[in-house]
Length: 133
Image (cartoon, rainbow, N blue to C red; front, side, top):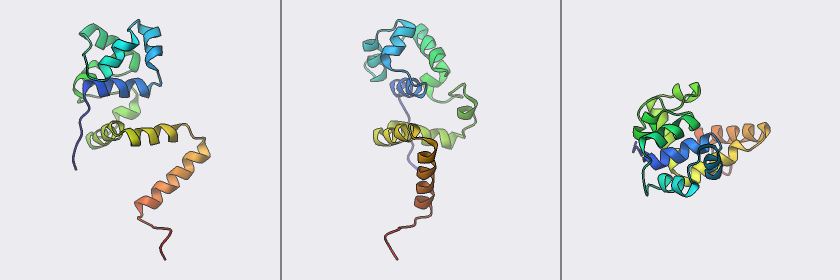
């Protein structure tokens, strides 16, 4: 399996999106200009250590994870319990814009919509083609 590793900027964006904050909201909470934050997330520039710590604390992640992607990334126990393989898969999903959009849309569904998506995933896993006899 090919492994994609996120850059510092991509991890910053992923962590921000996981706590459902916009760049403007981060600006309001930290005073970091949203244009500067955009530059961090797009790899144009890197935050200094103090700014990195402020963002890590706001996003609920460790500065070490933001920098390397290798440590227990999220303070949330669900993310900390992921295996290395699952973390790599999560990074791949977050790096793929189409998959990330799909997951973002699924997240917004009501419970019955999420149940339907779960059933569709099971069908795909079983490799059943409903259009074949």
